[in-house]
Image 1 (spheres, rainbow, N blue to C red):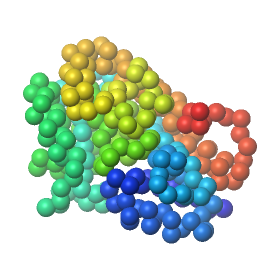
Image 2: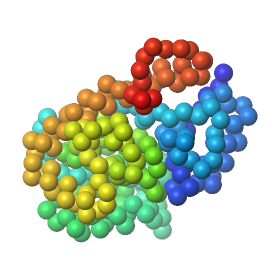
Image 3: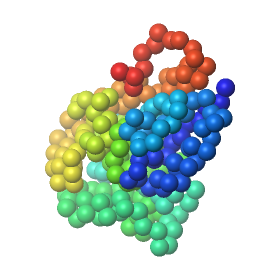
Image 4: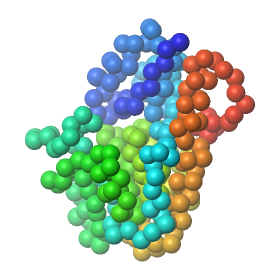
Length: 246
């Protein structure tokens, strides 16, 4: 039995659509199951035996509890010009930069900690943990137009480390997390309002962030996700309830 786990975006209005679609379909004749970080029913093409899985968190990676302390920075955001590029690529523009620059301009009272743009190099591994440890809130902003359930593993890194996490409501991640565990926003003005709201209300910010981490580790941890992949691939019947199958 052979399965594949595909992490990249597959929405028509996302980045690298044609290339990612080709990459995943070219193996369809030899793959028994495909696991996606996007809702398969939201795609405009069919992938046989495909299943949604969340980006898993792991206690060996997500080691912080930012909600338990006062942080110097309000909002953390990190991106790169590609996973395999260790530094900014000259002439490369990511559409998220436009959004982030406008967000910064609109929110003079928010202390931003941003990497991968504005002449700030991307950060990885230990550097990432060191930097993310000093922000109370995090923005989960993926490339392209939001599509149901898709996120990079950024969401596990933010929620799993105890930051109050903001996501576009069009991701529909509120299907799994309540307003007591995550913050959704409809547009940049709504996001700006909520950033300032939770900057002022630190107690509420920490409470929701703590709830979010607890929920993520309980239902989206690496052990559960791995068990689901094995069960689906080998057709093992299980009495266990996986939250993403509700």
